[in-house]
Length: 253
Ligand code: BGC
Image 1 (tube, rainbow, N blue to C red):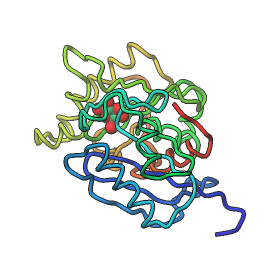
Image 2: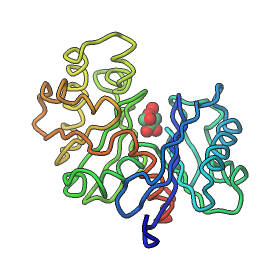
Image 3: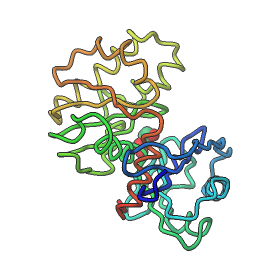
């Protein structure tokens, strides 16, 4: 690593794992091995904050830290908890993590927004031009709206009602697993959701991320929307990279 490299640290808090690494902010690549610690159960704020502090100390990182949450984060307060412990709602998450990691710069942001930031800078070119919607398919459906690569945060369209049911209850990757759906069966559900998003937002492109985008050839070709659907280039590490970028840019949604 040259001494000119600028480094950051990102942490992605998910339902099953808390993952973090040093990020090379010039290339968007991880500069160290990713550390993963299982998410404490129940995933209460204090337990998660203690795990975050443990991860940073294992990494021997002393600088600024960016942290993602699967939640709306407004003025550094978590406002929702769709797939996390209800104790997070209306919590000042900046204060929570500052007491676990005192005396350093911190930013907390939504996990899909972090993935969007990372993709717009280091991923597919479609993410930095036009009006694009990045979606992450996992336990829920996360969304990041990007206009010419700039983020409009906290859009949460995984909760949009599509034919009377929340999009993420129809078509998250977890639904595919829980119901034992084939790719073809699941793609139909995703297609229905994308048609509704297309009707309402007319983006220039959908960018699809989350672990399941690694197998994009099994489902993306089955989609019938006219908007181009492009697999994200950054896969599992997008949240970590975006979190590190957000704190380096002093972005505090
Ligand atoms: C949450 C979002 C999150 C998404 C992906 C949804 O249930 O409401 O905030 O981005 O899951 O984790």
